[in-house]
Length: 373
Image 1 (spheres, rainbow, N blue to C red):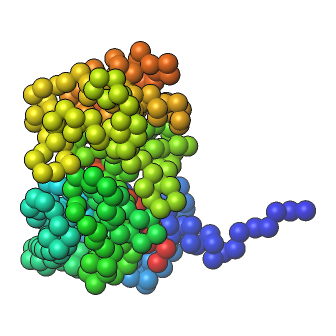
Image 2 (cartoon, helix red, strand yellow):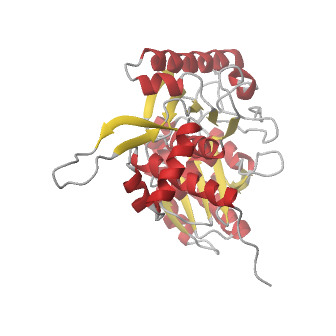
Image 3 (cartoon, one colour):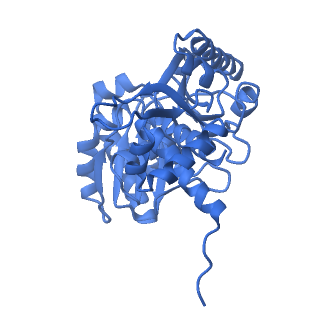
């Protein structure tokens, strides 16, 4: 029995998707260039462009190729329509709130930063989030580029990175014992609902850093251990970040490891015992830790990584965070002496890794929305 042939509607849909994705990569192309890039015939490419123009997804830019005098016919350049939309990428971290508007080409259209005081209380963080997002909107509106104004004033999707556990069902930031950053809970989905025309997706910052790391140096099975003012871990198995039932998988601060004097204790308590916490806070004093570089910290982190190696069998353990990357060689040496040694290396993405992961996901979601339309 002959397999069923795809319908004409399906073929047209697939062709249109190829054309849209080619324009996302190259910004502007003629019908002949689209045919060459996608591997479809020139007449088929031309029909796809016609459909997409009628759908309001593609426009004639008004620019033309040189033609005449033996150089062939004049070609029209096409691009994505100015109103296909933009995405919002947001980072909520101890350093403050960062909001970015990203267009469908992956360009940064506007960026705003708002500081957060210490201690970070829910009302203060919520207010900083609102200010940053509204400032991005104002910057887009004031842009001299008509394309930016049309596509970015109200984002079609938002992706939020938060330096706190995130309930995967609701997107709320959760308060856990000994949290070093947010003293309470906030609801980014609710805050941004009126400022974004589509879905608001929220996840933990270490998960986003792991996504950025995997894009930079593809590995399907690894643990990303974040060592900074706070402690965190993302577990990537078979190419997927494992978040757990509620979304709090990877919260390693309370895992038992080797503390000062060889005593077993939760990892977070090691820093309290060594006097390495910020005053009146559970946040780790990074400057003091790097000044003292106590061997007990290296032993404690080595115990944590040995436990991860036994439990999840990763190909590599990636260490990020300000003091983690400084001590990575000592940590790797400690792990090499454990019963289940595993390769340990510093994170490849050093600048704003969590925001980089959220930004890439926001761009992907925006492009999928454009194609689906």
